[in-house]
Image 1: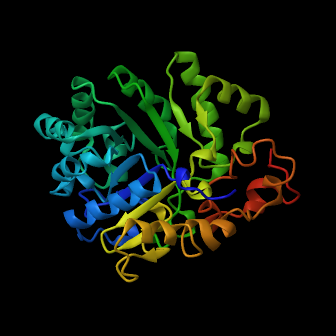
Image 2: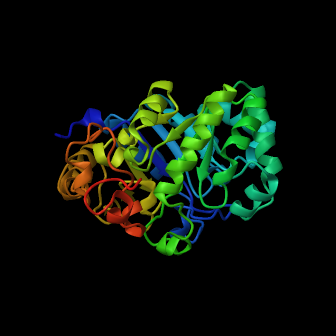
Length: 355
């Protein structure tokens, strides 16, 4: 695939890695959640770079982005760029209707609110907080203001049995977009050493199928973002789930297609949010000052479309490149799975998925 400016759709701003939760398996754990807020000036500069790449969406992340004191001002000052501002949040500060209203008025177009379990006990245990009721209030506030938002439940070993109950509760609250991810390892994340906090891909596939059958029976629509290989689901079932719109393929993974870029406060540029502490390059070290300089760099050998991009498509198992009708749409699961799980064990030694 050749790289063009049109390929970049999304920019992630890691505004500050400070967080008021400590969720199991968090991609940002390698930051030690140290507060290093991005200056407003630098945030506006890199948004200009992103616009030059053709980005349309700006996802504000952390840590917890609502702890960033310039959040509203950033959106107000960046309005001329014409970007859609979206928030990935644990939702705790959105429990304040006034605060949420202020963000909406400043230009927030969408919020993604993390829900870690169907029960207060599970959510609070996984997030290492007492935030369950705040999150539920945040969801109520988003419904009340008719905000464009989704909930995001990350499936792991401790909550995989609560998929259906969480969907039922969220549907009753009026949530229109109920999303599920599969928890992933991150490089350098000590909490997931050996995949301890990551659910096995085969187990995740079985739980997703089980939940799909029950939720379809109940008439509750959700979406599973498939960061695991699609072929772990039997073909007839997979076709039904795709047709019913319950699962998405891996094609949304921006690092394979170069559709996104992540900026950190310290100048680091990442190919994915899970690469905290493992940047491709640093804008401040390289003294990149203009959008044209960044565009040239990003599409060069040091950027995502260079050697990193080429290496990424060399997938570790032949099953994904031989006679797979979904290859290219399914990218064989997130690459981080194979840091902690053996693809030969997951797919089978001879390229056949285990039954």
